[in-house]
Amino acid sequence: MEALTQLQLAFDAVLGLALLWLAWQTLASPELFRAIVLFIAFGLLMALAWVRLEAPDVALAEAAIGAGLTGALLLTALSRLEPKNKSKIPHSKKPESEVDE
Amino acid sequence: MNNTGENTIPLSLRLLLMVLLTVMAVGLAYAVLSLPAQAPGLSVYAVENINISGVSNPVTAVLLNYRAYDTFLELGVLLLALLGVWSLGCAGCQHQSSPGPVLDSLSRLLVPILIMVSGYLLWAGAHAPGGAFQAGSVLGAAGVLLLLAGWRIHAGLAGLPLRIALVLGVAVFALVGAVLILPGGQLLAFPPAYAGGLILLFETVATLSIAISLTALFLGADPDEEDAS
Image (cartoon, rainbow over all chains, first blue to last red; front, top):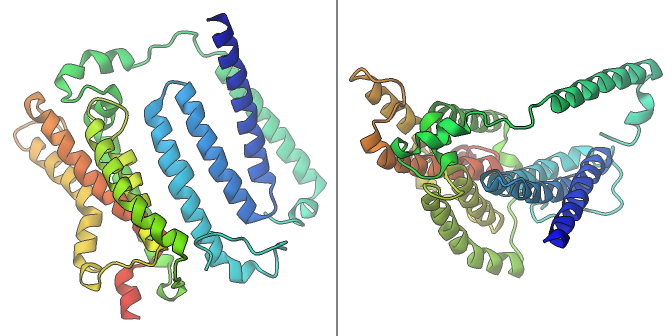
């Protein structure tokens, strides 16, 4: 039992740190496509954090809306911005998103 | 945000921002530290009245019975967001794409499953985690997948039927709320005998409206106009 508690603590610590790191990376990423992918990853981990906080309702909503649909909406928004921004934001390569073309 | 943005902000502004952010962080830390260790909040009342709420999941009871007004307004916010997107979106911007074989077969496999999961979440909301927003967003995800795979709404349904489906959630909330006021009750105060059925009705129409709104948000423009152009 003791070991299980330790394991859970370690898991929570890693989860919390990963969330902070992902949030920072999302904000600091100069490339918008990368930022959106990081945002989706952040949403999925956030859903996990809600599960750990014993709020499964919020976790479901976060996974479905926060990570899933918001990510899709951001990707379409990006694909519409793309032609205008191509000259401003350097892309190492064309992002291969499903909604891009 | 772009690469050069960081260098163009003057030093004084950056210092000011730093000070403001520090003040905010200290305030937040103070607020968190001064929270009482045990705070039952309103959860005691939520559980106490669960028997007359019509459902056995306290979260659903709060969202659709005690605070049904908030959910009503949330549906209104979603509708307003869609109106905003429609008024800005241009019909010609939509790229028509032909899906690859993976997306095509994946959407064929996933869409029925998503519809089933959405129905389960809607039904489970009465006694377990789930409910209208989760069910609606899963159903909306099915719609997004269909759009990605090249599906477009039938031209005959793009006009009035689509609009009715979009406002259905808000309309049913407003109508039932108004009917409940008439015999001297309060807005959206359900009589316990009908609470379960009313909540199921609300959740069903809200799920439909949310799903269709989210799919329409993804499309980004009024499909009726899109066809006309």
